Structures are given as C-alpha cells and as structure tokens.
Amino acid sequence: MKTVTVPESRTAAALAARRRKTETALERIYEAITRLRREKAQVSVAAIARRADVSRTFLYDNPEARTAVATAMAEARDSRSRMLVAQDDEREATWRERALNAEDGLKAAQAEILAQRTRIGELLGQIRDLQEEWTEERIQGSPPRTPHSSSGSAN
Image (cartoon, rainbow, N blue to C red; front, side):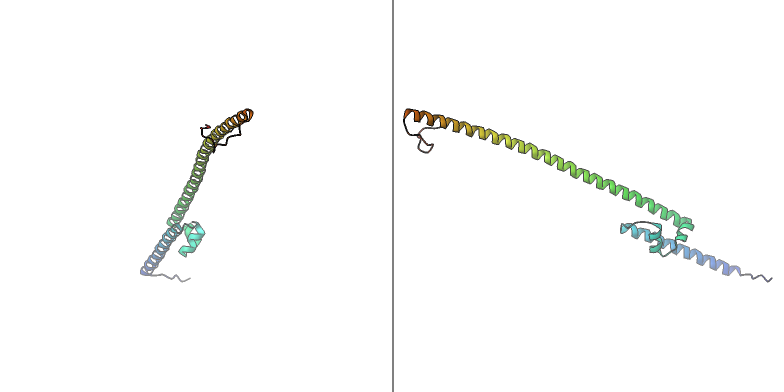
C-alpha cells in the first residue's frame, strides 16, 4: 500500500480556507439574526439557516453559531413576552379608563336626573298653586285667570 503525503503548505492552505468559509458563514448568521430582529420575524433555527444560507447541521455543530442562535431565540422569546405583557397592560389600562369614564358619566347622569326631578317638582308645585287659584276663583264666580292675563305674580 502506497501512502500519499500532502505537503504542509497545502494542508495549511486548506485549513485557512475552511476557517475563512466558517467565518463568512458566521457573519451571514449574525446578519440573518439582525435582519430577523429588525423585521420582527420569528427567530428559529430554520429561519436563520435559510436567511444565512447555511445548513442546520452547521448551526448545531459549530459552537459559536449554536450560541448565537440560542441567544437570539431566547432574546426573541423575552421580547415577545415583554410585548404581550405590554399589550395586556395597555388593554387593562383601556378598560380601566373606560370604567372611570363610565363612572364619571353615571355621576353626571345622576346629578342631571336629580336636577330634572327638582325642576319637575317645582313645576308641579306651580301647577298645583295655579289649580288652587283657579278653583278658588271659580268658586267665587270670576272667570279663571291665565298666567298671561294676570297682573299679579303667580309664583
């Protein structure tokens, strides 16, 4: 059996080329993660692999890539959780504000109802007073007075 020896310079060149290829792939991965975040798209292994044009195997096998993907996914989860909490808080604040507005509206309506009832009571009292005057005038034989023809005050 014959052994083939490769010169060290070719081996070093191949290793350097592999390192450059890996570094280029890692740069594409970081850029893909940045774009996904900017677009507020879902950050997943498949999405990063597609955007960075690398295999999923590379993402799992390369320690730096695996760490970058895991970090990006964790940050996306945290960001989504914060966004959902903020939306819930906003919805709750909206409902709280609506409840306070409804309470203020109810107080205003109750005050208006009280004012109207008071006014109705005053007007009913004036009607009663006028009816008594007219009844007394009929009993005495004079024609009933209307508020327009009366020279005195009927209040």
